Length: 546
Image 1 (cartoon, rainbow, N blue to C red):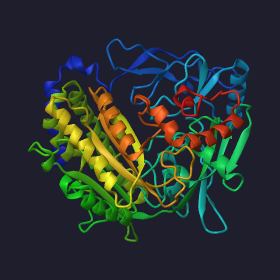
Image 2 (image 1 turned 90 degrees about the vertical axis):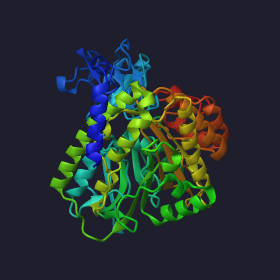
Image 3 (image 1 turned 45 degrees about the vertical axis):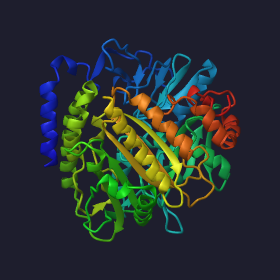
Image 4 (image 1 turned 60 degrees about the vertical axis):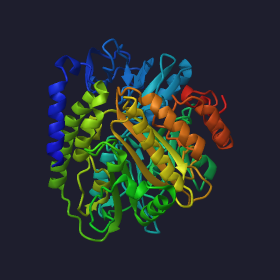
């Protein structure tokens, strides 16, 4: 069974991995012996002990220095002059006033699930941790019958899901990210997405944004008031101020079931779907456009007999269903607990793979069996979308890019097959830079200026494709650069701002060349709300012509 396979892999890793190596595990963290003493409240008073942000540093190397802040994956660190944790918009406004008086930069952070340096600020600035700004307003039904809900910037995906389930009637978002601990201020401002082809990216569900600008003014943006400013404010990358709240379109709770003959996840051979661009593209097009949501995964070397001709995919096809849901609260809790246990065990195996890369082709068939268990139930939409509760246990590296799908999805097949070809080419020289998965999802284009899926054609389909490896995986950076450059040169791909992209040589001039006019529109609006550059960061300065 898949769970036995995972346990077997865990035993392999435990038996071969020396105990002393576990001290350097990418999953390990070191708690410092003192709190961060420079954290103060908006009125200059120290926060209570419960509110103080502890300094933690993931052990990437035995000599790694401790920093005030690090992200979840451990690839970004920061040492801001002060870290604030406001609870109200009044506190947020006061923090901006203090920063203005001290001539400090300001960046926001939540659970730290961005791989880019978007939250990083050092002694020249303040970090605003928005985790305590977690109010969910009562959902509102308009005269036309549609529903919206306003959430403060620190509300997590799980908190909103739970809140909407309890509403009368129960409600849900039509699409969402897989992770449930991330916060809406981050996932919307950075242009994140789900897998629902018919609804676009998550920011395209937004109807209103409230942002505190560099003068401490709370601004409200709507499409009706100014469509261009609303577009800039929705995916604002934290460059127009600190977000107070978003209002999003929601709908009555709906059910999803697997959209195929057997009503389960499928595991076709790679060659069945990606045999050649023409026939494979036609199959993909029919699948994606016929489903509500589609996700395709590839675990390298997943067949016991080494060779891409034997490798299989994991395909999740969801369609809406009026059949009654077969999930329930008790089953959900048990499933989440089991998934957390499985991924905790799996994390040890992946630590072993990072330290012993040549074992990758031997361990991956076991891991593929463990993670690709069939789903064969009709479930409430949030349970289908958030299909794995334990992802947080496995810090990873992630490069993701978006490109416009051609009329027959042929460029999707080419983009996918190039990665697999390179994985096997690297294996021939003893390198294994990908030890998690390659994944693709499909969304409608976005109307938000800074979205990587921005397009003036509202019916255009974008492929969101990514490669992931566990932290500390040797050669991932070099491999991801090669893949990114191929996607850029051949498909005009653009990076997902929250993922890894800054390490790709020449990417800023490339993006300026492809989308400079689009970025300049955003910059003209940004300057109106942040003329002093309080929120500007080196991550995005070059993109905006600075």
